[in-house]
Image (cartoon, rainbow, N blue to C red; front, side, top):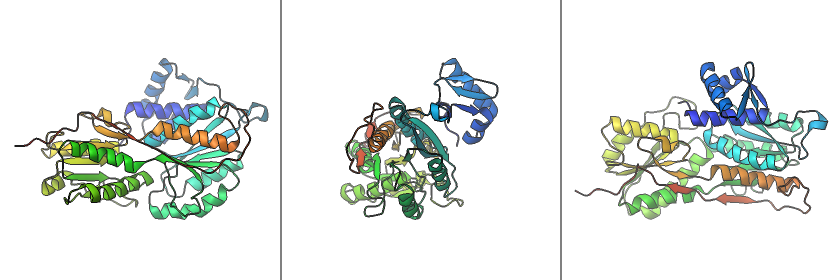
Length: 369
């Protein structure tokens, strides 16, 4: 499913600002939309004064330092590695970009394709090109893929400052002491559950992805909280979309409406936003109204507010994650955040930031007959 127009335009703006100049055909290929759509988006961003349009290219309105030694920014260059077509992490990347640029450091956006193992050559090329540090959000579709990256990532970043964003390596692993900044997803799920319980809901279903570290953290948190707060009721977990599993094979249809009816559940937590919007439409097709028949809380809050009705959503601090990660990296690089060098060793950090809950029109109190 393609990204909404405002999300896509933020991705275009971030990509052009990171690279300085990008061909429109390249943007169309990376975002998987038509060249006509890209031209329309770039024209709108140009009218808003956010980009400059050239012949077949989009240019940043902010001058970008080039590779000549004399043009290198005073703080050098930091690589930001994020998966392609990931609106959540693009918001995180933008938060990091603001902090880095304010410190005189050039952010270089490095987008990893969806195929497994694509981060490794990208990171190795960036290090060979002389980046001074890395902000990393590996895709890690499965626990096995994550564990399989630990040794090489530890070895590759042994002499280069690196910070993980929205990723928390397994305790006791070789990456345990690697700097990381992520959301407290247990707290995010806790907010959603407590909101639904306060509205009188006692049977809750989680429809969630299982193909990212965030998805696995949400599932684990729901299981732990259900054990404590379900009051003996069965709280089920299903996949939120046919492609939500770690493998790339064909998925099974999501039967949320049937499960809600079978369990007598009156509320659902849906991860992530785009899947949540699709599932709400499926509930409507099955004759279940939101929130009258089923209250819905989305998890991520990237596009949840655009739903009909607008979806109540858990909002991890996406931009703040990026800003904090950049600040940790700058301290590791010896910057004080204003482009100056600061002395002293920096202890490794594992930072967690708390999500918030945005209450909208998709949740209401249980109606008793």
